[in-house]
Image 1 (tube, helix red, strand yellow):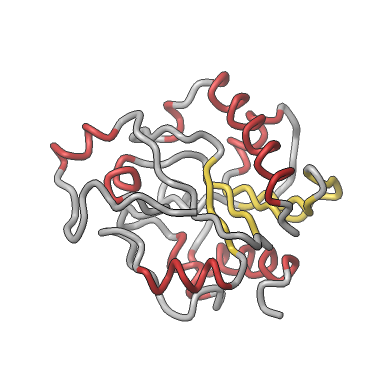
Image 2 (cartoon, helix red, strand yellow):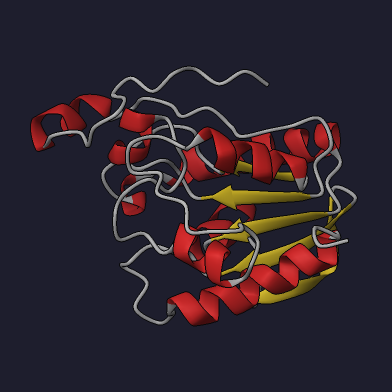
Amino acid sequence: MARRPPPIAGRKPTKDELVKFAGKRVDDLMGDNVRLLLVGINPGLWTAAVNAHFARPGNRFWPALAEAKITSQLVDASMGLPQWAEDELLGKGIAITNLCAVATARADELSKEQLLAGGKRIRRLVRKVQPEVVAFLGATAYRAAFSVKAPIGKSDEMFEGAQLWVLPNPSGLNAHESVASLAQWYRQAAEAAGVFT
């Protein structure tokens, strides 16, 4: 699926520029053969500005993927997703989307209605792309979107035919997790999806 060039490319966005990206969208990273679908909560303003998931410096997503050996090296997405990283992820069958498509400064700005609508969209997407594993990166948002109680880790329930994992959010605001603990969780989900075979 073709991704749009980043609105702000080759440099980090300024604070004044970031506020203009509230309500904007970021393209899904999606290939033809999806094994592992990673679902973030929603794009931050920085992510929308550079059209690259988890782009804000300090977010632990990319360091956790590197530590888990899901990526071959640390990705710096702060000025857009490097082509080599996009190619590597898609080649391994890894896709990235968001529960809610609109960018906000903080995930807690999302309404219950937005989370519920996002949950319906993700159900349709999973039925369409048929990943082995769908991993939601944010337990609180997952619980709100689907009105369920869900522990962290692999679920006994399936999600539209995919193995369901509910995993910790990599935001720096999630003080309960470290890069190392996130890497362990993400590695387990990737192994279950067959990413390393």
